Image (tube, rainbow, N blue to C red):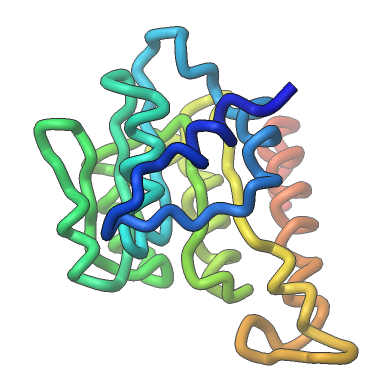
Length: 191
């Protein structure tokens, strides 16, 4: 059977708020993100707003139970904001720890964080370390998604692209550090 979320994405109205999603993400999101019909309030932080289609699509998917917060460098992304719909856009960098902390203090903790920002290893790692380890940023039993990790696989070999990372270790350390940090936190280790 087809994913309801995929159908939702495909029915996104054509507009200036372009929705750019890999279709094969839909069933995974449906499986792992909170159900949309449970009526419980949800808070989502999305790094990377771009044209705003994702902000609108997530808000339509979850409805009034969702408080959506998008972060982007481009001030033009602010056009997607709708305070009345609890869809907020903040302008700043995922590389700025003070900015990210201020987002958590103002809107957090989040149930869902989606990093669809620059896809640059050091930026992804900084955001992950800061947000994931903070009770002010991440609620218990929340989910942290890093989209488009496949671009980081270009760090070595044929077609090597140093735009995203300089060494394959930049890619592999993302998930290994996060995995260890997650388990160390819950087991009370100080590593």
